[in-house]
Length: 115
Image (tube, rainbow, N blue to C red):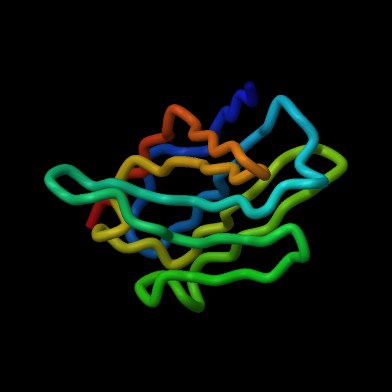
């Protein structure tokens, strides 16, 4: 079992920045991929960004150029740097870790962007 703990969410004004962190309780060296998802009230959970074990990244069109995903395999931690935040970025952000044969989710962290 792997525990994922997100942190860094909060309330920010439009145009501001936040940095989310996702700390894993187990090594992420052999992970297939890690990603950030978000879910706004009344909406389905959607992919925000993903990073593979080799460092290849992919982003939702809505966040390209504003968000940056990264990971530190020594610290077993993944990050999401969010810049130029918009009110439509308001959601609960979830961390996902895709190990071989296993998939894990964090509890989520709330991000609220005021206009």
